[in-house]
Image 1: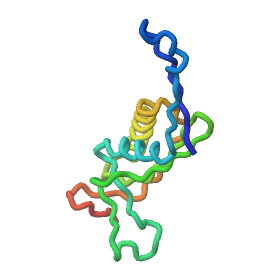
Image 2: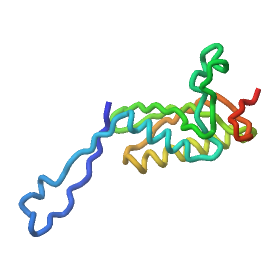
Image 3: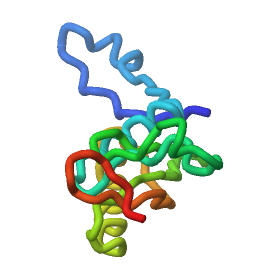
Image 4: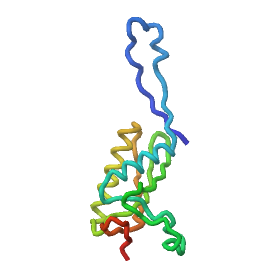
Length: 142
């Protein structure tokens, strides 16, 4: 699915007065692009990182794909009319306050996606998949 944003036409210049009606256009933004923008925006915060890629599978720690604060968070975007709803899966630096981090994350991602796309953002659902100790190695807190 894609969203469409429209810009009002620019005032015609004297040399192009006859083509003023052709100056309008539409921009189509796919859900994948919005998701990438949301993921990048989430990664701009220092206490937020990428989730364990295989977090829900048994034995995932053995086969790799660990959560890491240097990786980008996962994001999914859903377009409903002219509004984007977002889902984020993130890891959080331990012992950061989860309510503070998720509130900051939600506000930051909403503002950045709205700024970059011109679309209003509705729900921003956040799943915290891991807590990571700040030892530079991305170690999970057990």
